[in-house]
Picture (cartoon, rainbow, N blue to C red):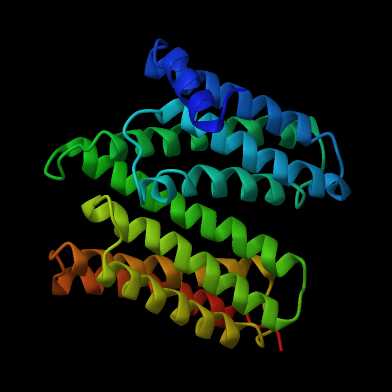
Length: 271
């Protein structure tokens, strides 16, 4: 009887014969079809589709990347494909179930999952940081972290849970996302203490921010926008600090983005 290790070796031996670009297209196509299929069912079937998406995304991400996955890379390379898939699926239920929304939604999802898997592949092959390819991958990954954050906060506040659940969700999501982001700066095969510390700080800051805004009379989209801007600005400054490229102009840029969104948030208050 084949054990798990033998099965994995057999799978890798067969899959490695397929060109990586083709494997990537196959994975994106299957996930896109699965996402399309799920949109024909109501939210009460989410308990079935969520585990299916978790397993399918993990296996297909592994099929796409395959080579050279070690230690912390099992987390760093797989987190974003998983979150993109899960929160796109949950976010869809905020729209009416029509073909007019379904087709553009699937198209945007497939573009997104393709971009995220491509970034994971670039991180996995160990491209040197001074290359333009790595910089592009890091920027795209950071952009999709903001997208994931916005989708997550939209879904979280749409459920209208007690503020306690909101802050726990905000803290955990910020910790995991920032951990992946900060790890991708150096791409070390192990988790460094300063990376963990900065991620914990980010998670704690988002908990406090979410606690504050939970008591404000705002629309769900405004909640999501403000929390996303906060996460984007904080992690933007921290990742430049870790990379030893933090300048006054950089801080001013991120602070300006946050201040602009803060003004929008204050103007959106409806007492």
